[in-house]
Length: 400
Image (cartoon, rainbow, N blue to C red; front, side, top):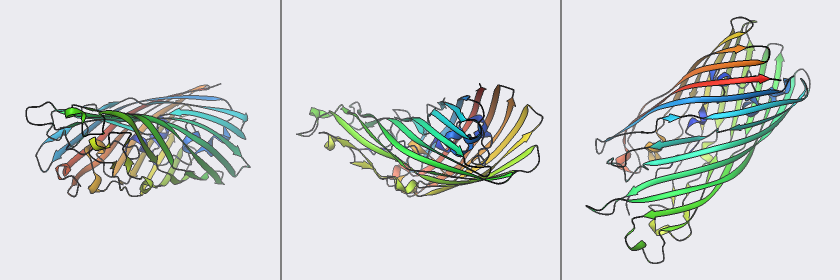
């Protein structure tokens, strides 16, 4: 059975983009300055200042332009499912207003999907359909110790769902067979943040996150295997795998330059090398798999950026941000299922703040410079990759 599985995995995906319009608007300078309810997950100490209960609803519209030109075959493949519509919800409840707050978030912090033609020349080397979706339940608590120091901590209770479908060659004139994987499961991690008010107009925020290992169980099916496969195997069986979402350490600096202008600067280090090879464990179908695991060999990476907020008047704000996010995927394990490179995120947005309600809207362009891969373990995957996204994010906040 020929073919190589290329798996969609989360760390090189939409996770680089914050989910609220305010956070996206100041994408590279949010850790010390973010004030909406999504801060309970981004920089939890920031919610200690909350003086009223707050509910935040976010929705976004993503459109991706992902293409691959194979150097070996000259073939071009394009992602045929370019639209993604994520959403999230956060709420903050002050226990002691301005001093002690509890928060709860439900979000989809990691995930990616791709869909390629089932008639492509590369159909035996790239999954024609792959999807990884996560849901994160995030309880957090924050305490303002004094006017200078606040601390916050939370749990990440994550559910992951993986689906992966790939064709394999059965012979000339014979319909292709299919390998189908499906699994879901849970994992738990934790995070903590500290915010230090250096002066009334300057802040430092430090946020650390533990890795999350999500263990998933499900089923495997091989369709079109002649005679059901080698002796002792089955075309259907249980399937198990696990994925580790990386830990990270982030530092943010915020400064109120004037009464109207606030700037932020962020640095983040992500431990992507903590990813192990992704196992493909089946109860009695191992001989039908192209490999027992999927190699990653990813490198640690850094993010750098800045963000700015300008108060036009008491109710209107303008925001802009830039974020550089370093690629961690080497040529050897590169795959169109996660086509990526160093990312540059440019954002601009507006916010309206009323007495009890706020509305924020942000547009972001996620630009990945074209990347030429020459050292892929599977030679047919060498070639030129293009990968970019357009993002429109809307957030609505109600304060009770």
